[in-house]
Length: 317
Image (cartoon, one colour):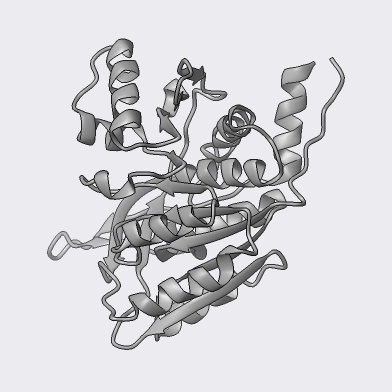
């Protein structure tokens, strides 16, 4: 079969959601203090990465798309670091700095590629600036082909129904990575991308494949979605669409070194592919391949268009 090179150079995506600074503190070993058994972890290296919605934006840029990200950060050093990490030629950010809030930060301490501990700083963004956020979204929407809402339940999307309402009026597709126990607020979205655990918290435990298929179709109808994609880790992902049979995409990799940020990669690739004119089925196929690449990396990582094309062309041989 002839090799096929894809590119997403014409993609224009608006990302809105919870920005997080992901920090990785690496230790080669750890020991205990003899006096009181307090663990001592010597840190050899520190790495900082855009997390949450910021990781979605970085994935879009690294794969070749252009995006703008809107959201909140704190008035602090971590917020400045996050801005610096977002200084990418294909990312434009319009962030609202909130007084008396810290930038949401997650510190993961790792040894021998295993996570020992996670420290979370600031649980949510608390602000009365939601109207400012919504105005920034409204002012930007007409310039972009797709809206991605990255919900980490940190406060940015607390009025998500309103965002869905005014975006639908502009006939712009809305892709949502959901969080929490209330999926009703996502009603009317173009695509929802829960992982299996998130899906089961809403529809109940799925003991058999048929349970996933039946409950997926029911949720699709209940929430009036155009499509639902359930990501299932080593079992791939399953796509539900109105008036179509479910499509299953087997996992391209059975080994997962780290699934942190894999959901960000999936929704980013789907958004970028759709904005480039690919069908939803094609977009999910590319996203499934991309997830198989990114889970082999440690930490919040992204993939490049060259990595995706290499894997794609191996499959076409």
